Image (cartoon, rainbow, N blue to C red; front, side, top):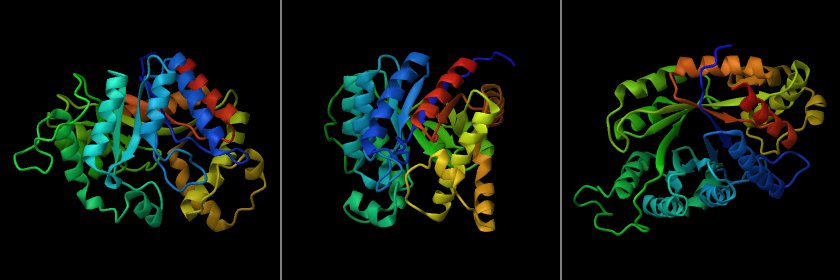
Length: 332
């Protein structure tokens, strides 16, 4: 296998595995971030989800502060803040404070899709969520961070605190052409969520590079986020893969459940409809031994022409998740 260096990062959704509590999931996130710091991963992102029995983090900015204080070298950030819920001014304040506390280590990843059902989204936002305002919100947020808002803007001449010399890296996170086009237009970094959509990502990421206009960043920089479960042997990988299927099925049917264990997966009785739904989701998975997984990850990176791979691992146990990230660090 060619030994071309690959920059690896982590996306952590703080999964709540069946039989465990949300507190267990949060503690596992802190432990994994410290391990990733020691293993040489480049950055560590935490996701935002609301009202989920299977995912434990509704406030990435708070988790970012905890993880940055518990690590030494990693960049730490949001993967991502769901901006339609919030005031761009408040988000800018929060992440400038994080940048002041941990200069040169903070990422602000932005997403548009609500991390929950519509009623929960309305409760989080304190009113209706209007995704159509997302481009204007991102534009305002960047203007605040750069101190370059257009004349007459509602935030013009407002003092953004704390005033520090560095700024967080800003990323657009997306699974469609919308996010890539907006990132290129505004001149920010872009990460395509292959773990959400295995279709057309290559074209979206390549178009981002081609359309990029200097803005917040001088040049394009892209990543691809992939779902990976890596195990020592093919037999162990196959067993762990069993637990991915009911999780995907729950997502497809909109069922709000904790992450299944292998034992629960083995007890499942699938219908033909279930199997069809599971099969449709499998292209998003990269599961196998270190060599098998690395080969597929490199192929995805090359097809996306990505600068970096961000790895999401949701496994049937916290030990299996930890081992997966250890094996990836070794093979890369």
